[in-house]
Picture 1 (cartoon, rainbow over the protein chains, first blue to last red):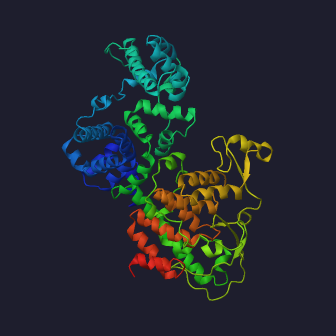
Picture 2: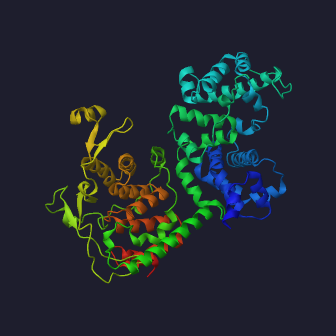
Picture 3: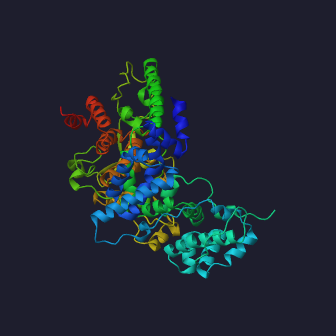
Length: 197
Length: 365
């Protein structure tokens, strides 16, 4: 019994999904332990309501098994994130039809895919060159955050940007860096869109 | 071989839930915050979660969310292991009591046995310390539901006593109690041959009972102010700095006096913040543990209240154990742990102590 539980505790998300589909209720508890807090945070971000956020998490988990039998779940983490965001979107549309929906919620999730390897594998020389091609705001934020290892707050204090702007510059800067490095022919990369810096 | 930059862009290590909470609560320094933010940059789910968890009230809600966990999984395992360990402990203690009539109950500062069963649920891994954010975002429960203020409570000096000439910091002595409350505990057949604790010195501040600090500490304890905390008894930091020749420190009793003044004024957040500060320097202070439990209960921080009451009830200085056990049972009730609460009330009722009648009322007797 203990060995079985321990093996579940070390199972990947996808293995837990499989176990849950097969009727192992314990897997649901483990997924809860891994994701309830995060999904509650997601709910709070968009719904701004503690009770609603809790309810949405509980309901999501209550229907998780059924949901997974209807959908193929290749990677659980981004999938459950999207499910939670969609639930928030539904709640907002239903309860506050006249209120504006956060633009972020309407956009598809941008996850770091394998292309992120370009960033991690780049040599310092290539990276320096690529950073030089970013616009000024992105350059500053990327240098301070990733090279100097400052926090968002420190970067914001130094540059005068808001935390949101810092995050946005970092997000866009990273995406553009990946594209620049791909174009420059980093190993295992292909040509993609032009950077929109 | 060219220099690789993976360490600049890739998150390092694993981001634990506690770490994320600490980040969301603004408790990390810049270096630690950066380490978390590397994770957030790489994972939109984490970024969304951190954004949400940093909103006011998030932590209190998180506490409640944990109670709605589906059955099965890791926590059940932990509970099972804890239950097993507790069972072994119970058997061991029972055998020990049968065999050790030569040793008095009070010889060893064992945890209060009345809480025995109910405490199993909280005998878990150490929880992270109470945070300023939790206090700040807590919401007071309705006044009629609050605890710890009525003059009829055991830790509150009665009106008659209060009107007497007893001074605020007068020392009292209480004899050690001999009640046997643990279901596993058998009545002693002999008087103890020795007792390590003949009495405990008490004092009253704002008519609230405390263990005198001389009974808790070998040397008179002082509180050392830090950059983030201005003790309530100082109007400002300049006044604080002038005191004691510029040293930012104050005595235990005036500190508790100011903290409990807030409590009696129903400023539970203010009181709890003071006690949190004290507990950072004196983490096992039974006075602070007990009153922090009351504050948490009145602020709806039920899981925290349970933890503080449990620690007060099982403290080696058994001055608040009866009160703490009672409030612990009430907290279990608020946490919707009905069965555990009923079992606790049953033990309190059977013990026939100060709260026995109230416990019987809870049981519907």
